[in-house]
Length: 469
Ligand code: UTP
Image (tube, rainbow, N blue to C red; front, top):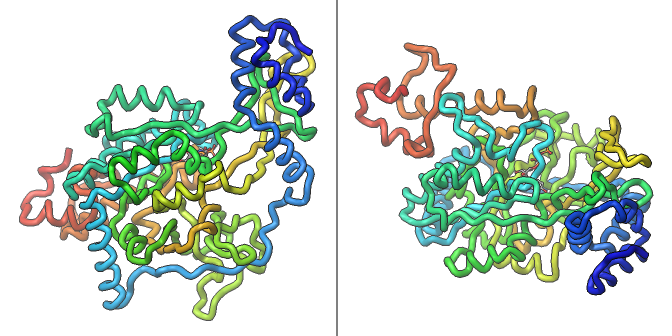
């Protein structure tokens, strides 16, 4: 046993030995009291029983390949084509607007991820993205929330989930920018939990003498974090029962979309999802569907080639409901879903994780060497008693910044934003084929947050050029 541990921490030390993780004390004798405390504090948060199960089930067991079972596609509400369908959408919009005006809706951003593919040095939300003003993702989201709050004459509180990786810098960024015009008391930050990675032998990975490698527990961790942080209670106090969930990297996100909220409310759904129709079988996006009868998102790697390319009679793909990570939750559903902790399955990812070698030197491996565990929020779909799955126009609602270059990059996101602004201007009656090069163009959400608002703002306007900044 190791020396110099307070008597009240002896139980923890025993647990670590019992779990055969005592290699993490290898440098104990070299650590100063602060470092020792640092290490023990991290270990106190570790659920060793969970790790033992994940090691046996996921790394070594039968659940390793995450077999998805019998797969069936899910029905969804299609974009309106007929007049009747237009009327149905208008009704949904009216119901959604009523819920917004009644102050029932909160915006909920998950921003605890590592953003490793983008390779940006800092929280992803701080990435400057807008085509002309170079506004950050956080500022764009904030301005959309401010615009909707003004439009519906309410305060739409904004809950932001971060993780240990970016919590402090996110809060500081908002403070430095005066919360982008929002009331600081209506922006609520909280962190999600972290979970350690394991090596192929089921051992914790040390990346410093006083540190074990941990990652945020996936966006599925947002549900438990809403509960444990007190955010759900805060919502209750504010009279919020509908939570509009979005991710930090989608530049076209319609936050608190009344149509989506309306369908959700009218159909008495507990958790809903927006989808875009997948037309290219090879597109690497999960699809909403049933796995052994349970609704969820089928990962693209779980679709056989035959399923991936299978088509319906009308030529559309059989599995076409591409998941875009936009949801609405009932606060009550989140309460039930998190009763007793995080109630979602864990997924495994084989990753390159920095570690200390036998000489105590830090190594950044060139190939995957250990396993990370994550939960996915869409796995909660199968637990909802009722769900709305709503198709949206990809060009208007989905363009994520995932990679530094190529597809889903800052470059494609800016192009998609400019294309959207041009469509909106055309809708407002302005012919952009004449005069000027509009390769760069930007409309602030505070000026107009949708095409109809833009049309209204510009009606009777003789000189659009006045607005060119
Ligand atoms: P991604 O799955 O794209 O991951 O997250 P990421 O961390 O942003 O980027 P990579 O994969 O490392 O390149 C989608 C959304 O879910 C959030 C992210 O912040 C993003 O808004 N997320 C992801 C969390 O909040 N917590 C997590 O543990 C994981």
